[in-house]
Image (tube, helix red, strand yellow):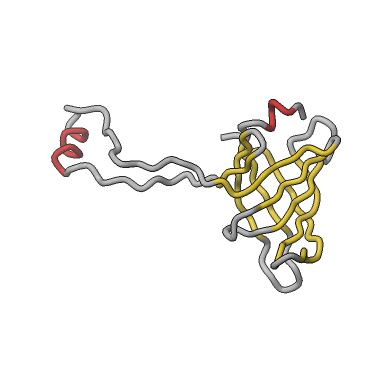
Length: 136
């Protein structure tokens, strides 16, 4: 997959669970050499009941959402190493650690690899990971 298809893309990931645990799932967005959290929700003040009534009656067609914060939180860095990538997650949430990934098949939007959680200065065991390009 060319770099320009990775840039700005949203990826969903699934990290296989260790024995007895649940898999970790989530999404992130790639922007340059940074990884950002993806959260489709924003906090807003609700519109007034009068404004809602006017929309229902067809007198107004739009609601301006005041005070929405759509800024994304940087959670890591991505570095290309040959045909593969290394992602270093730097935030506690969703986790800290590193991920090594490569394309499953040439031209595929599925990437596979492993994740190693970081605790202090040590990395844990390898856990299989799968990433898929999200197409909203």
